[in-house]
Length: 95
Image 1 (cartoon, rainbow, N blue to C red):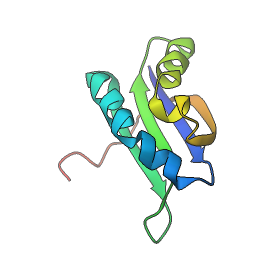
Image 2: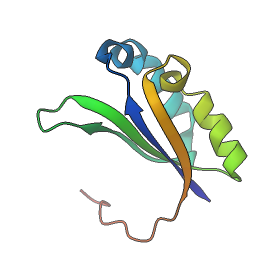
Image 3: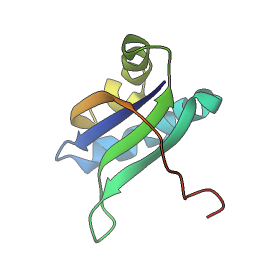
């Protein structure tokens, strides 16, 4: 099953930049379990949060995986939620 993380950043953009390299390494380690990931942005391109989708066997497993993300561990997010996600349409393939 898929689980989405929906997060809002704190007011300190430096936290994101400081943890970014480790965050990207963490995403790479997830391999095929990572479905998609990317930041929410302002119209000017400033990153303000994140949306990630992973495959996991349960809500508890998804929450444990997300809890290991350097963005979570280093306090980049002011808040986040993990919710089951059903991928029904994917028009992004080949873009």
